[in-house]
Length: 177
Image 1: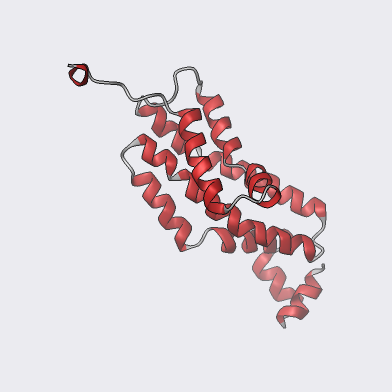
Image 2 (image 1 turned 135 degrees about the vertical axis):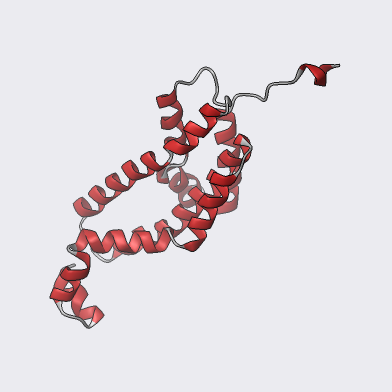
């Protein structure tokens, strides 16, 4: 796929495509962002960040991951089928994974600050676990390869995140009496 072919398909000049997107990678980024990071995503993130209870906040990460993976799976399939060269796509996926890792830091910080991060986990390990469990690879294996519904994946992910990252609630002394 060339910029010229994209421009012909869009019925604009190649210079216009370069001016707007700068490169084929710029086009890929725009396609992925548009498919996954629209108003529904922004609302889901806002809801998760405003949740006061650490378990609720962590469980709300599951529908966010599902929404991104549902949207981006179709886009990645389209891009691969359209002849986007593998090195460009691989580089873009690597950049997106780094960005996802960085964006998830707030979740681990909030769990740690609330005293709800499992005591046997250090900060970096907790970040790595959150990043790994919400990865496109796990989504792909369960939903695409094993035939799970997106809802089943979301429910499993919410439970897995809670089990893997949260310390049990501290029982108050008054609750025992």
